[in-house]
Amino acid sequence: MKPIKLSEDVFFLQVNHFNRSLFDSLIPLPEGTSYNAYLVKGKNKTALLDSADPEKREVLFDYLKDVKELDYVVAHHGEQDHSGSIPAVLEKYPNAKVATNPKCKELLMTHLHIPAEKFMEVKDYDTLDLGGKALQFIYTPWVHWPETMSTFLKEDKILFSCDFFGSHLATGAVFSERNIVHDPMKRYYAEIMMPFRSSIRANLEKVGKLDLAMIAPSHGPVHKDVEFVTGLYRDWSSDAVKNNALLAYVSMHGSTAVLINRLASRLQELGVAVEKINMEHFDEGRVAMALVDAATIVIGTPTVLTGPHPKAVYGAYLANALRPRARFVSVVGSYGWGGKAVETIAGMIPNLKAEVLSPVMIKGLPTAADLARVDELAALIADKHKGL
Ligand code: FEO
Image (cartoon, rainbow, N blue to C red):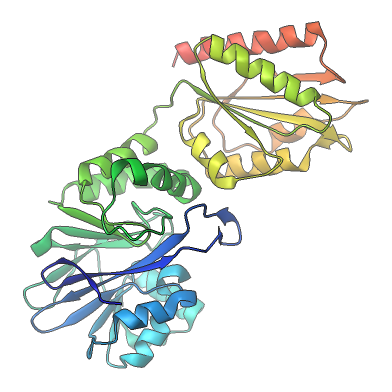
């Protein structure tokens, strides 16, 4: 593979992984992913920015086959999809130093056993001059680990942002297009960035002071439309929710589905946009994306062995872990002879700073009176949304 030229002496080493279906043994990758490294050549020194997942190491090394000397490997992040091939890079280039912050150094030492003498620690806003190309390190913590940082290349107005602004999208395209990158970016934000909204806002402010022509993340295509992608992040990380309700449910014999369908219809009649997701076949990314905007989350569950259905438990656990900005939450469902499904779900979501709206838990197949209670819940949700 030939390195892809982004600007003079700045190259994109795009390592696509089209067939990867799962990340972290957890997150579905409907469009694959990529691990992007970048090469910056100064008059005196050469730096590689990040590496690639070890599973695709040979692609990275193919890009590097004509690179005789490497002076620095900049590590923006300790997670192995970007750092995992650094030990092999250091074997090929034994004189190279790993330039990173102290937190990332510690992670790379413990996770990859890279010896301390291989590192060059950098501070926030430090500059590394390669000769006509100066790399400025910008600490961007908690996007999405504590050690994450970015690099600003002032001469070319490029921000190398690692996971920040990334997307799980394997593509032959070098540059992103709005309509193609929007959903993969949102999915990625929802899955790993959403719990850290306040840090994201601080980092957006920090990088917003830079004069940027390009943002080059370590997953997905490079962004020339800087205003578009920073605007998306500003929107998603703000405190403003939308007039949306997420109805995430599972149904065993149809009763919970009847309640959820009724709730969806009534909410739509009342002008609330509804995302209805059956968790029987769980797509964590789809649920996470819906959580980004929802003002209300309703979990629908039947009762299994006196408690909520395990898939509803998983949905509640996921929502709690991702700390979405939802303002209201409720539970609907049915039971056969008793149970504590509502109490169990309610106890699982302490991170949601949301008002609990009266749950609708019914016995058996819904009656007309039960459906009237669902209608009341719909009216309450619509009313609450008007007050946002
Ligand atoms: Fe793409 Fe957090 O690693």
